[in-house]
Amino acid sequence: MIIAGVIALCIVLAILAFIAPRLSRHPQRGASAAFGAGARGGSKAPGKLGKWFSKPFRTSQKAVNRSAEGGRRGRGKLPL
Figure (cartoon, rainbow, N blue to C red):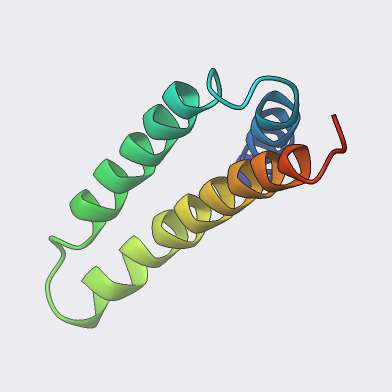
């Protein structure tokens, strides 16, 4: 369920970044901040558990940022 949510968020941000690149920055930062807070919270666990708990949040944050940047990059390649 959570994986589907992250995938849906990536798709929405990529489409928004392609349609309106400037307007996509704020939702991207909001999603990145939410995943960053989860990663910081997960990293407070002791030892290796902290690394393991924060990893899903870090990879989700990377995926969201990468999809939004890809949408903006695709828009930049248009001949318009």
